[in-house]
Image 1: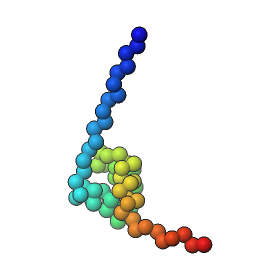
Image 2: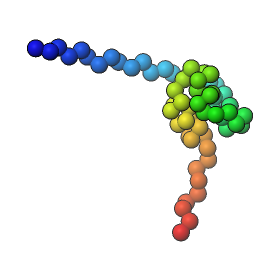
Image 3: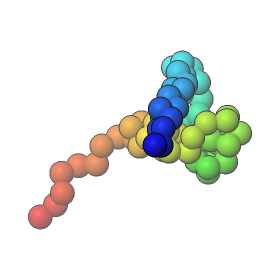
Length: 64
């Protein structure tokens, strides 16, 4: 009989607003690569990418 180990719980890191703002600023204003900024800050590039996309103004409705 096999015993399944319970999946390890992931630890979700909470980032404060100042951290988020600075991380997004490095990408959007300083022109640094998302991957490089995420690495420097010790965070996931996927999370930083979400923050950057959310910070950009929405594009207008599709023309057609």
